[in-house]
Each structure stands twice: as C-alpha cells, then as structure tokens.
Length: 74
Image 1 (cartoon, rainbow, N blue to C red):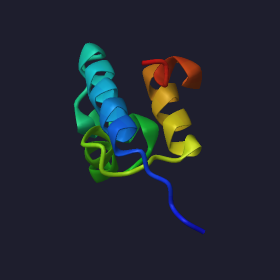
Image 2 (cartoon, rainbow, N blue to C red):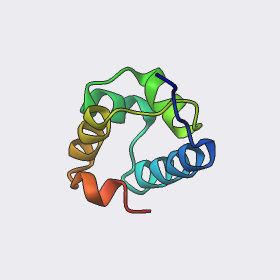
Image 3 (cartoon, one colour):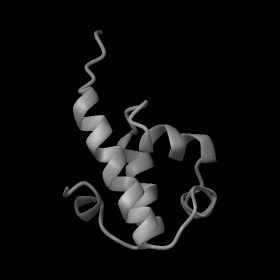
C-alpha cells in the first residue's frame, strides 16, 4: 500500500494547530498532557512532518474543548 501525503496540507494544518494552541494560551507540553499524546508529536504535527491519525486529532480537539470538525476547519 502506498502512503499518500499532501505536504502542503500537512504544513497548513500544522500552522493552524499552532495558531489555535497559542490562541488557547497553551504550550506544546500543556496540549500534549491535555490530549495524552507525546509532546514531540505535537511539534511534528505543527511542523507538518507527520500525518496525524483521526484518533490523535480527536484527542487534540477534546483538549481544546472543540469538535473535530472545528479543529480541521481551516
């Protein structure tokens, strides 16, 4: 199975995630703790280096107290 990655989309989402995190006055460490995911994963998502799973995105959305659809609406 071939992995499909849209680097531009991942980069744009990373920028969006960082913006939302900063608007919520959260550090990467705080977001990682609230979402129960490794801190380095937050950094890699924000830099557009990895394609996060739906489960990861859902955990991040819950940490922000928003819906998954709100998180990915950018």
